[in-house]
Length: 567
Image 1 (cartoon, rainbow, N blue to C red):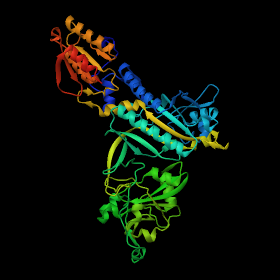
Image 2 (cartoon, rainbow, N blue to C red):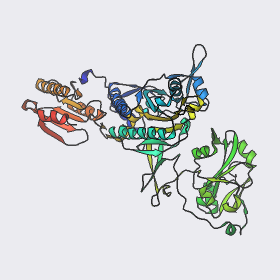
Image 3 (cartoon, rainbow, N blue to C red):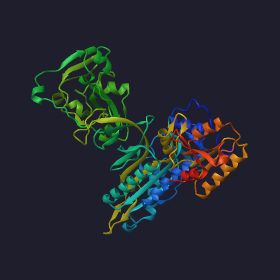
Image 4 (tube, rainbow, N blue to C red):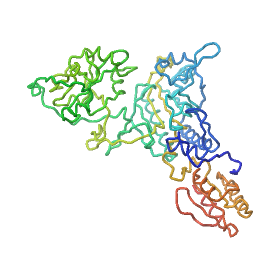
């Protein structure tokens, strides 16, 4: 490819709205251009990389025995209503009506569609196991699109779905996809971790893992053990309690204390007023779960994990109670809620129940209660893990490890769905005994366009992109120093032809530009190997430089071609 003919509009400076490094690089290197918030056009270089990523995903899916299909992006609303997700999914679901006023949605995912397809085509255990996948554009009306391709409203995704006759079969399908994902991300030269995660709006009855690309810009927090291989998304991260408390009989010796705390509502204010650490207080928050109020208690230095609370309650919706609801339930304004005497369910985190003595809200304006003994005064509470894990917590899997925190970008997710969708959409089969059973399903997604951004977050330097060879738009960048020097241009064309014969993709910079401009653009677009054809061209010598190496080699044309063809 001749660079003079390539649509590659590079920029010296990144637009001010681009916050993430990957977003800045893609704009500067001419990979993408924004059409609207969260919606992008891929220019030739960006499209070439995207196709390389698609091909890696496709090869590994095919290798794992999955079969490729292509499903409609426009989905009838009644399918989502049958699954129960039409109202639950929320405003991120792009909804529309056709000219006959029939309701549709633009697919953010395809569990309903694939289940409806298999329902009509699979009727016997002899047709199982079955795994189908597609690579297709998805739509989500993100409230705040940001970071370029990392959080967009239109994006490219690979979604796969497995169908088995029993849970043992699902586990095999799940692990098959799990291993395929490891191969995909390794081939993309990504630094990543597979972490335990929450199933979110996809739902399901079994395990789930997220594949996280490690990057500081990542919106997800990963808790990982310092000793073993345990890792989990913060939403799911567990911890092991090491604290012990005295017996209930010992705690019963002292009574409650009524404490006057005018306008002292926040933990920070209580810490200052009593000259105590935050871990000496109980924080009581009032939530509304599926329309009913519930109280959640955590230690003052901890934060409520709303996902854990929601899952513990098997709730569809969970939100903090408003002022009116809080006052109705506690007889006090926000900031004075306490666990004693509440007429609603109370959830107490393990760390609360491990406290010897604490100060909590009194359910009365301007008052707190001291000397609260959890084993004595909170016997009505449901004890569980309701808080975010924290750095330094004991690992839940091993004895020695402590949790450390990292930032990550979710690039893949695998779910054990079970019968969530097959039951709702009546997708059944006849087993070997002739009995009708619901299909056991799994779901496996990769954000292909997000993967492009994640790779760039890890593979760049101060000069631009440093593409891994496996997904680079071209493998070799041939740069004649002067387009007016016929000897240089002839040598460059000769090298290009030999590389093409060897199946190596090469870009030849034939532009009549200053050498400095060419080299800056070459570093910016980050092609793995650069061959500079300069003043030694007449002697059969060129300069070869790897993008990730500061040193250049002056070698013969034959040597340069041979090195460019190395795997």
